[in-house]
Length: 141
Image (cartoon, rainbow, N blue to C red; front, side):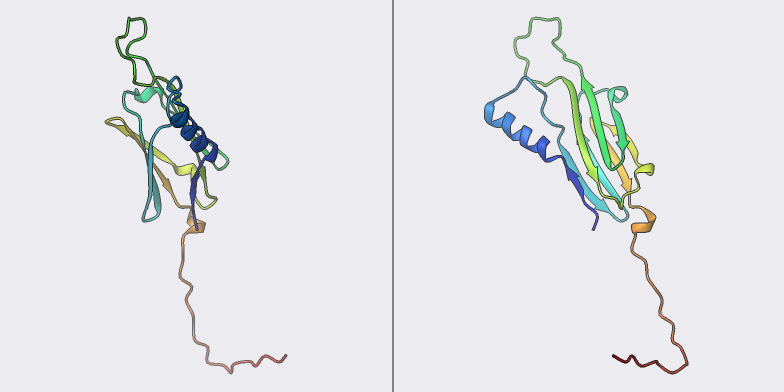
């Protein structure tokens, strides 16, 4: 079975931020992931991020997504500043059965979409059975 796991420490950090009310650091980028035929599709919400600030890196079985969102109120006297800015980063731990050499990415309307294909050697395949005309050998114990 092929699974994509998220970093458990990132999830713990996110929960701690909620409980402690830590709003100084940017929250993790929300993500949806699902399998569509022989491809895993992953969507990251990155509103207000420029495409040229997004960086994707695969090292072994870890895919790292990072992006920078500039503050709209930087250098101004803000009345309210609730939108997180700074560097966002998220890691996905990919199963061995995924083809990390052929990951594709697109970015539209604040959503980064990744397509991660299943490796050829991991795809299920049929094995044909042929009928032989000779006698069946008996197995002796």
